[in-house]
Length: 127
Image 1: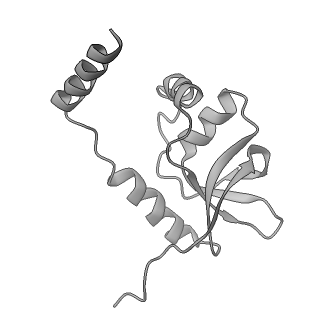
Image 2 (image 1 turned 45 degrees about the vertical axis):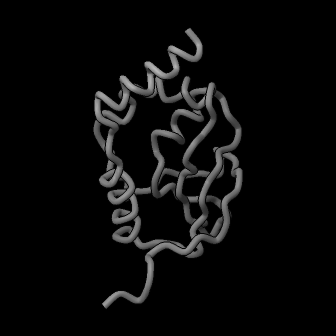
């Protein structure tokens, strides 16, 4: 029986990149830098669409739970801050791994035809 959701949000804030440490529960451990330049360029042009997820540490820093590639892309473009969803409490390594895995697992890529439709629409709009 569940006692409610695992995550309770304390706030969503812009936090300094230098106050963030990578968590040990990251799901992505291989090919983390793959296509990072493309992600960084997208963030530069469009902005960050989904905040990273962190919890606050006792020393005032934040541990990154989810959004490692977004964090690294921000570093690559020289950003000083990043939008972060700050959880209301410190997560155990098991809880953090669940959050990281869930965020990565439930993300589905659009189908090839959906991409074609969207690109066709934009091409018609902008040439």
